[in-house]
Each structure stands twice: as structure tokens, then as C-alpha cells.
Length: 360
Ligand code: SAM
Ligand code: SF4
Ligand code: SF4
Image 1: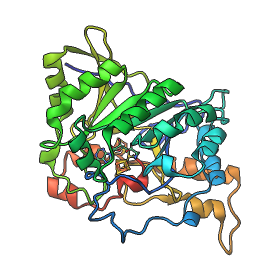
Image 2: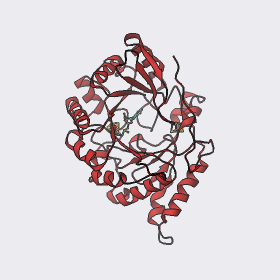
Image 3: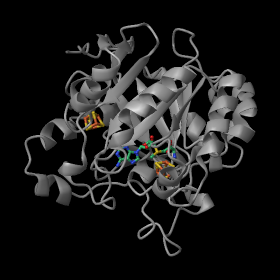
Image 4: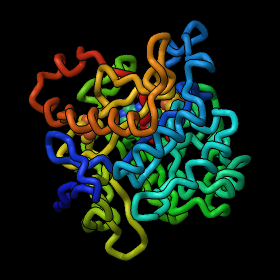
């Protein structure tokens, strides 16, 4: 079984990094806070009562986020994703979505506007998000077992409320809905087939994500990773699959469809099948640092550029675009590819930014 990835094509602006990759996707983290404490992302021992989250004035304002997104769209980005932390915790998120939904690419198209959420507030917010102009949601669900789901989110959040949220999102027209499931060996790998079956019945595309060594607090070990090839093999043994070619350049998931035509799944092989060669994504943290790789240890301070300082005025839109294209033009990141060549300890000990900070 094989799946092909197409090389990233340059957008009309011609902006490309040192490896010829275009800037196409911008993931914007709108908060570093979350109401869950998923054990693989924000373990309680680290993100406890003493943890210092960002203050309100440290966060990018909506005006600042819209200016950054507009600059990125002018440079070729046609996919915006809001994330976090938990993006639905950011007060007034609908207003931000409304403003982002007004942006247009240089050739007059509305960029695809998506949001990744744990689903806890979707039941209440789905209608308003859609009305504001959100196109799609991705919801994270790692287990179908109530007890296990609550043990993973570690705040006893009930699974059925996330399912209510997914149903509300579908009713509101926030589809096609994608579901993300992080698979960790010995934790939920026995649910690979049941998860696939459940979301196939519901008509949503499930994407299995290999447990990543992102951040420094989740105790990652290579042995915890269930390789995508194994996930595909296990599902294929019960429900035969065939590969589907990528629908878009730079797509993170390798797609597989059920041979009986009942839907498809995706696998995101961040550990075992690096896809840096087609990586067209940049990320902005909630406090405005621009990262050109999920595994970067430092980011470019866009907030300072926008706000200026005692001796420098804030940047104009043209200066902001120049800064973005300069950072992207210097980009040479390919952490996942290089990680495969490192001994596991070296990969583990490297300084990295937490997923809840940089935005997944
Ligand atoms: N709170 C939202 C959510 O959970 O969907 C959005 C932010 S979360 C950081 C984005 C995605 O990153 C989620 O699907 C989550 O499962 C995934 N994620 C977090 N830590 C991860 C890790 N160590 N390995 C793989 N995926 C991870
Ligand atoms: Fe929160 Fe999402 Fe991280 Fe879970 S994965 S702790 S829901 S940010
Ligand atoms: Fe992109 Fe960095 Fe992930 Fe490679 S490791 S796919 S460059 S974010």
C-alpha cells in the first residue's frame, strides 16, 4: 500500500522558502489556555495551579491577528486555522472569525477558515461560529470509552458532550467535519478499529495522529508511537482500504478510503513518515511569535513589530508583509526529517515549544 504526495507548488506571489516550499497555511493560536489537561499535551503536573498563562495584554488583539492574517493572505496563504490551547475559550472568537471571513486572496477567493477544538463548547457555539463565517471544524476525540476519555482529558469532561458538540457542528453546516485522534501505545491503540467504525457511521473523516515529541512535558518515548502503517494495516484487515491522492498540496494527512465506498480515514505520520518536503505551514502563537516549524525552539516576534517600542513606531502593513516574507524566505526547517536521523535521546533532549503554546 502506498500513498503519494505531490510537491508544494508556488502560489502566484512566488514566495518560497530555501527548500522551494510555498507559504499556504497559517495556524493562529488565539489562547494558550485550555479547560482540558490532556495527558499528552498539558499534563497537570506542569500545567497546574502555579502555571503562568499569558496575561490578556500579552495576547495578540483581534486587530493584530487580522493584520497578520491579511498580510499572510496577501503573500499566498489560502488556509487559516484557529487553534490553541482551546480556541473557543477566547472571548469574542465569533467576532474574530467574522473579520477573518472578510479576507480575500489576491485572486479574490475567501481563504478556507477552519478551527481545531476539543469540542467542549461546540454544542453552545456551533451556530454562532457558522453564522460568523467559519467554514469547518476539526474536533479531537481520542477514545470512545467514557472513563478512558475522561482519564485522557484529566478534567473528567464527559464524552457525550463532545459528541453533542460534533452533532451541533454538523447541523450548523461546519463540515466536512474532521476528527483528530492521537494514538498512544497501551493507552488507546485497542480503539483504532472502533474509532474508525464509529466515525464512518457518523460520516466524519477520522485522522489518526502519531503521538509526537512536541514540547518537553509529555514524557514522549518512541515506544509510545503507533506507526501509521500499523494503524492502516489494522483497519485494512477488517475494512479494506485503498489510498487516495492528496486533495491539496501540503496536506498533512495521508488519505485512505474504504473500498466499499463508505468514507475515508487519514493518518498523520509526523514521526514515522516526515512530510517536511511539502510543509507549507506557519504558526503564530497567542502572543504573536511566528514559528515556521512545529518543533522550532524560537519564533519571530511579530507583536513587537506591530506594537513598536519606545524608539520605533509600529510596522505598517507593507513592513509586516516584508517581515513575513523575510522569515519565510530564510526558512530551512525540516525537523521531522532530521529527527529520524537522531538517536532518540538527542531528539528527546532538544529544547522545544509546547503544543498548547504554539498551536497544534
Ligand atoms: N484544544 C484543541 C484540540 O484539542 O483540538 C486545539 C489545540 S490541540 C494542541 C491541537 C491538536 O494537537 C489536537 O488534535 C491534539 O490532539 C493534538 N496534539 C496535542 N499534543 C499532541 C502530541 N503530543 N502528539 C500529537 N498530537 C498532539
Ligand atoms: Fe487542550 Fe487540545 Fe491540548 Fe487537550 S490537546 S490539553 S484539549 S490544547
Ligand atoms: Fe513542517 Fe516542521 Fe513538521 Fe517538518 S517538522 S512537517 S517542517 S512543521
